[in-house]
Each structure stands twice: as structure tokens, then as C-alpha cells.
Length: 185
Picture (spheres, rainbow, N blue to C red):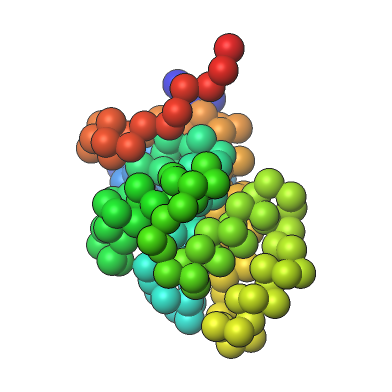
């Protein structure tokens, strides 16, 4: 259960109602600080609509962060978004297998993007070897956009966990389809 109240659009002053164009639980809680939500949405908008990184690769990177963080909200929302940007069920299954160190049929660039997201999430930075390998496929602008995406979504999963944002019922089916593995007791 969320740690702070969810605020409905009708409860906001007119100058902040635009912040809830998408009435998702994350925004309904972040709007407790309208200026923070506006800043948050700004970088999110850039990543989704202005970034030079291929949309499918972007979503794979975000999904990798969500999987590693065991973030139900991030994972479920970006499975849905991933489908819209070309991520397939085979990609999701391969991401899970690749994370576990199993062989997959993912393309080399896909595997490098997932590795970069794993390293940044687990180790705090993309390794030199992975960064250099990515540079053989991506421009400097793509590299900045990819690193910004991975870093931003690492921040997002920490916000989600700290505020205990609830997953909306419409997204539960994605968690049911691709549940997180049980954690050892």
C-alpha cells in the first residue's frame, strides 16, 4: 500500500491538473510535489519521445532494470509499453534467460544493451569493456541517451519501492504472465 496519498486530478488546482493526463498511480502520488513530478515527467518525456536510442532497445534496457530491481510496477508497465515498441514475448523470455546466464538467440546488440543495464544496476556503472563494445554499434549521442535511460529507470525503481506505489489492476496480467522468481527464504 502506498506510503503517501494518491491525489486525484479533480483535487488539484487547475495549473497542476495537466500533470495527471495519464492517471497512473505513480503520478497520482508524485503529484504531492507538483514541481518534482513536472521535472520527473520532463526526463521521462525526453527518453520516450526524443531519445535517439531505438525504441525496442530502450524498452529492453528498462525491462532489464525492472527485472533486476524486482519492481512489479516498472516490470508490468514496461512489458505493456515494450509490446507497443516491438518487444516480443520471445524477447522477454530471452531477457530472463540472459539475466540467468543462459544462452539465448538475442542479437549481439540486444545482449550488450541488457549487459549494460545489468552492470549499471548491479555495479553502479557500465564496464569499460561493455561500453567500448556498445560504441561499435552506437553513436556518441546514442550512448548518452542509453546511459541516461538506464540511470533514470534505476532512479524510478527506487522511487517506486520507497513510496510503495501500487500496480494498477490493468497491469496485473503482465505480472501473472511473467512473474518474478521466488526469492530464497
